[in-house]
Every structure is written in C-alpha cells, then in structure tokens.
Amino acid sequence: MTTPNPTASDGRQSVSDRLNQTCLCVTLDRVALAKALEREAGDPTFVETFIRQRPYLFSNVPVFLSADAVAEMQACVLTIEATTRLPSYRGAVLSWAPPIAQKDHGPVGALMGYDFHLGGDGPRLIEVNTNAGGAFLNALLARAQRACCADMEPPSATAYSFEDAVLWMFQEEWRRQRGTGTSHSIAIVDDDPEEQYLYPEFVLARQVLSQRGVDAVIADARRLRYDRGRLSFDGQNIDLVYNRVTDFALDRPEHEALRDAYRDGAVVVTPNPHNHALLADKRNLTLLSDPATLEGLGAEPGLCARLSVVPRTVLLTPATADELWKSRKNLFFKPTGGHGGKAVYRGDKVTKGVWAKITRGGYVAQTLVRPSERMVKVDNSAQTRKLDIRLYTYNGRVLLTAARLYQGQTTNFQTPGGGFAPVFII
Image (cartoon, rainbow, N blue to C red; front, top):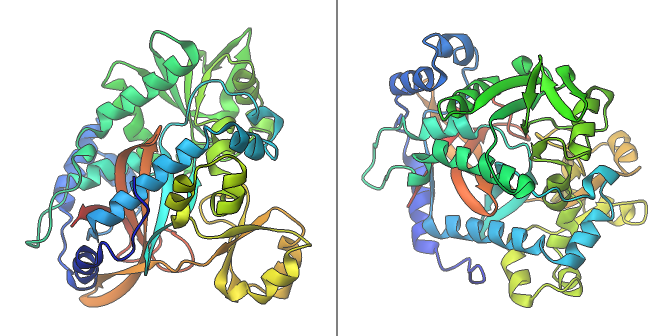
C-alpha cells in the first residue's frame, strides 16, 4: 500500500465525476431484480410483500468511482484492521469499552461496514459500523443492472460470489472461536426483526444460509433463552448468532439471554461487543485521525500516512467545548456509540439547547466532509442527490462495494430517486 496521492487519479476521477453528473440512464432492471429477489427468498410474493412498500430502497442508477478511489478505500480498511492488532492501540480503545467487550472470543466481525464520503481530495472515512445493513440486497441489486454507457462495466465480480463468501465467513467465525467443525444452526437476531426497515434482507440471509445446508432462523432477541449452557430460540438450539442488535454492549434487559450466552462463550456471536470496541466505537476515530498519537502507540509512520483518509476527530468534552463551538460550522457531531445517523448534528445547525445537551459527554466532533453528488432523474427532471460509499468487509477483505443516494443530513431511504445503488468502477 502507498500513501494516498490526491492528484494521481485526476484523469479517472474526472471521468467518474462526469458520469455521476451527466449519466441519467435508468440502468436498474426492476423485472430482473424482482425475479432474483423472489428466487433467492424462495417466495413468489416476496417483492409484493416486502419491496413494494419500500419504494426508495433501490435507486435506478449506479454510482461511478475511479479505480484509484476504490484502492484508497480498500487500503484504509486494511490499515485500520492492522492498527487494531497493535497491543498498545487495543489497550487504548479497550480502556473506554464496557466490561463485556474486554474478552476476545475469537471472531473478528461479520460484514463490517466502512462508510466513505468522496471529498474534493479523495475518499474520506466517515465511520465504521458493526451492524452494516443491506449487503444481501446489494448483492442482488448489482446483478440486476443493464449497461447504458460505453464507460460502464459490470460491478465487481465479488458481488457474484457474495453468497458463497457469506457462508465461508460465518464458518470462519465459528472456527475462530471453536477451533474446528462448522456451525449448523445460525440465528439472525435483532429487536422486533419484522418491524425493521431492512427485514427483507433478513429473509434473504436466512434463505442463503438454508440453501447451503445451515439451519437458519430469524429471531427476536427478546425471545432467546439461555439455560444450562445453551442458547435457544423457540426450543431450537442456536450455536451462532448473526448479530444485528444495535445495543452494542448488550446491556439492555431484553438482551439478557444473548449477553449471558456470549459472556460465557456458550454461543458464537458475530459481530460482537469486542468487535465494536476495536473497530466501531467513534472514540477510536480520535486516535486513527491523529498521527502523533498513533506513533506514540507504536504505529509506523507509513501506517499513519495511509490513515490520512480519516478526517480529524476529537472528543467533545467541557475542556474542548469552547474551541469546538467556535469552529462548529466546519464540524459534524456524532454520539460515540451511535448508528444509522441517529442523534447526529451538523455544526452549522446546532442550537444552544442541543449544544448544552451534547457537551455533557458521549459525543465526538469530526471535521465536516461534504458528500459528493449524483444526478438522478425524478419525474423527468434532473435532480441532485448526495452519495456515500459503503465497503462491506470481513477481516479486511472487501466482499461487496455499494453506494447510497439520499437527501437531507443522513441516509434515510425516504428520497425519490435515492436508495441503494451499485458501484461501477472506472
């Protein structure tokens, strides 16, 4: 890996920018997508039941990226995961993690999500997520595209082998904790899963695993039971949990069974509190964006240079509040354990009342990186949508790359012309 060079990809970047601004072709073959979704779900009513009521889940257009920008993002993923293996770094981030996150049971975190904005000088990492949603949907979306421009190429081949990679990933997580053998029963766990916006992908994930010989169920975390060293759901023993719960410390009362089984090592949980502590707690960005601190923790200068894609992030405390208030227009404020764009504030929109609340603790201030834009056609008129890029990864390996188009402050799947979009590399 080399130090990112913002000027190295100017030619290719200009092509991708031009296409994002001018290519308004509708490339999504919705008939093919519907057939693929119903085939994968094993349910001829899947689209009518789950997709029709989510009209802005998928955008009609792809997003174009330069190959160099993608390489920078992949290098960032590898570098961050290499950093988490430094003993001094692990000690630093675990110092603010909850007790349940201290023990490493072995798994490294299934389907991590690295989210980027494309700034004027290249991609910038916005955050890392352990509950990154949408991968199963995006894998099918990528296969339902039609080429419309000479510059367009099909999405990365990783999309086509995604489902097999998923099975390998979960079995690898099993082996990391158990040493040998394979997992035979996997529960896809969330709170009120049927009420989640991305419930359709839970159905797809269950079918992907079932087709490959795994007894897979979708389980409400409240209905899990832990007794005599076994975790179960409706009487069925569970040996691996694909965890989509956003209570990252598993400290809410309704997660008692999952928490106790994980703590005792009675079930393999992925991603888990330890994974979140190492990779996704937003306080970690205060270290990753500070070369001097990283070097003090034993990171080599080359590693620090490759993390220049991480915007400067600092902890919001009473000691830093006055300075951050003065520069707030160039900052974005996020809760340290937040997810899904909830309770985040753009600095130029922060009121005195909000400021009084967030300065009590639990927030970081990140240098604002404005998202790039994609033009789309809505009701026969060209309109601008913001975009971000998500890399779905496992152990540093990129399994799938996708984009999200939206209006407003954060991704919301409420925008005409917006939603998940495949990435085409130029």
